[in-house]
Image (cartoon, rainbow, N blue to C red):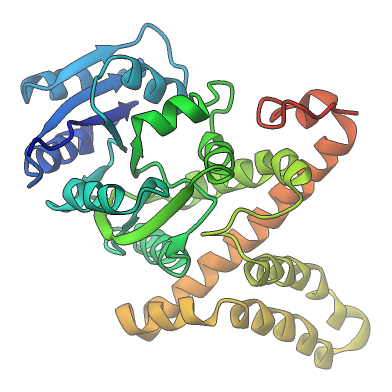
Length: 339
């Protein structure tokens, strides 16, 4: 019996360091029927040469348009019944494609399957990368099951479902996956599973990571304002409260100036509440890397929580004052008029 062809689509922008590892992992897949295309989004670091040296077909774009557009172009230039998107900084486990296909074959209600990344960094083994790997793994793994949040770093979608839902919104450069997950999950099950796994070359420097998280939080506000709910599978109410508690702890550090050292109990209580909101994540960091790393993890995640809260606050102000900002996701809600 013939197996369905899987089109592995790798959007890439300046990932020369990890692209070869990614493509070798694709070549090592146990699934027998795969075509591969790299869509290079106007890289300047030799990524095209890396892919071509491995005999992989490359579509080199004339300008940089973001991951969403690159994925759409990959779909238009492939023929597989199943589309498998994999980011250029991810190395899939050898059975990742086979596991995703098996789920789609046995569960017709599932329109797309997303994988869960291992906690260990792929290439850059810095403390920040170790933090991000553990944090991202825990947040993903704790949401395993049916979700509304698309994880496009490893994601298999039936071509028929993609054609039904439509392409990624090319105007969304940092939140196209949240938008697409919301659109897809309204019609089909979107499955997040540890059966599909791989390792990710996570952000390994602190300030680029914080900058990315700030803008992602900011740009999600118009979508959540329209949807009136968080995406499931990553963001939870307890994590939102944890971020707020961490941010609230900052101004309360000034209380001892007016009320004495006893007032330090207030920021301490808020920090404790922030940690308690995601206690299992901190427990994982302790088990994996010990007490010294846990202290570093707590400090970095405090900064992450404050950054996310700041992004939400700025996004809320933009939503109140900017009509174009409120209209970012009009294509997602075509029947609604924006005030």
